[in-house]
Picture 1 (cartoon, rainbow, N blue to C red):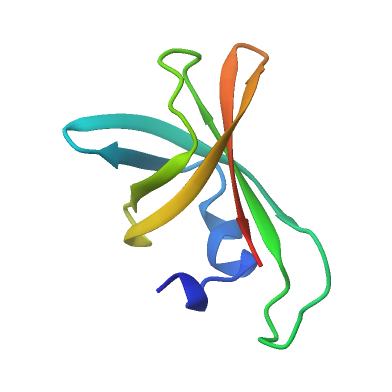
Picture 2: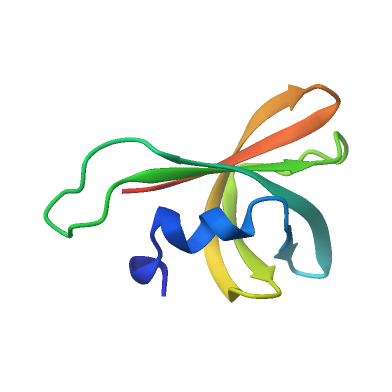
Length: 96
């Protein structure tokens, strides 16, 4: 499923809730930004990044999480915490 995602898959979902899950724990995040970060490669898909915002606590570590969204459904995504900004924790995913 991840290989079929493009920046265009996520752009209309900006501002929507994405729930991170690991075991019994859940964290509600908001998709804040979708950014194309370079030209398309052999796959034809341009690399892009996603920025999610969450409450400042608890901080979840760098890991692969089950992510769910009402429209896109459920998928696994590797996220990296980038630190807090303006009172919200930032998490980033990069697609190459």
